[in-house]
Length: 389
Length: 226
Image (cartoon, rainbow over all chains, first blue to last red; front, side, top):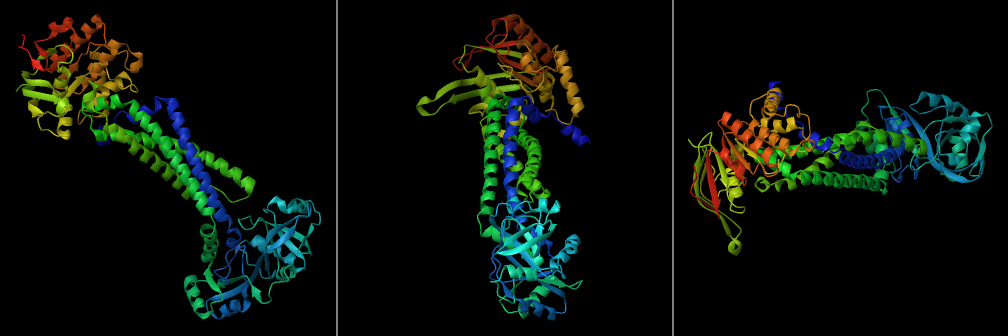
């Protein structure tokens, strides 16, 4: 405590900033703008990556089998269903569920325009979702030609949810076959799919007659309690031929995200956007601190003549950078929250503030301000106390 | 021991053809508590001499000893330590614009080691009272008159308990009456602290406050006048 009181000094950095409120406001506006830019770009990026696996996350499975020819959720290839049955030979496997997965052309019942929708086909008696409320709804699919429609789908598919809630019979066409909406579910859109529908295996195969029989796109494997998924994956890889890929559930999610991250330019573009925000912020803070140091050069020189050390003055500029970062972050954070809300509303993408992104942007803003402070300090070296007489 | 001892001090600016000798063989000393005035036409090297004694420049030739510390050949760190014991008052007041009068003075008191924040603040207030500005403590420099600013500068210089005070034309920006007041105040306070003072001035009206007068011309010291 004694050390604290001895160490306490006049908050020079704070006063240097706050006694010029207009300049401070301009600086904060600039920093906040850079922060918002970073929040936006990173938010979009993460939101899009998150969105690409909304459906993947719903699966109640420990291990997932897919074809090695599958590139992503929008280009899923089939593999022999036998492979899924073969996994039952492993003592740790409790049960398996075959799932059909593919894009279909949905006709908007209002405008009669076609649009690709992601369809999942499965046995209605054997639902596989994490969410028990979803499992409860699948019973209606036992009748042929019935589907469950994702009410979070984009409006381009037609006012399906509204019509359904009004009690109307909603029917439309998929690939020339009549289907009826028998319920609504909430899954969410993604990069690849603007909308989703669930149906039974039978209906699915009716709608996609060109699919080879005996082939499925996704095989879900549930393990007995206590089994180690990674070990079972290794065993299955050894046992099964290489016409099938064995992934943990996380591996399945990573497979999808990696496609969007590495095989498309989306990740690069948004990361570049965030980097731009960083650079713009650096330029603004550097300008502010540089002018600030230049303006106060005689005063800094006076302090040096009085016997203050250069390192003490460098600390003053560093603290100015720190205060700018802290003050500029708050409005950026709040505006980020608001914009995320807006984007969620407009795009139905799961864009939200999470702690790690909040911290990433905070770190970026801190680095930005400190870096600029370091650069502006070079001006301080020019403060020659002998020149002020 | 004398507060300042200068022996055969030489100093030059520039290189080669442009080299210009500003100080030649200057020798003098100042005793503790002595008030010495340095006069001479402009450009004769007074300010250079002041900056050398103030440990703001490196000594080129000769010997300079300030408060027992030799400055010839002294490094940055050593000169900074010496500066802490020297109070400086400039032609312009050089106050920090963003700080109030009290805070400006405290910037001087903050150099004192081992004192709590409160003690340093009280020190600053006491010095402001000593220069007669107890009503103006919270004002920013822009709201003070020229004489008041210079008095704040004096308080700031003295707040660090210096043993040597260097002043470069402290009255230059002031009218004659205020100038006179400021210098008398400076002299009185320095005496009370038994702090040596070296003051550069053009102003003939303040000569009588000095114990001793040094006159310079063309980089040389003329014979000392008592």
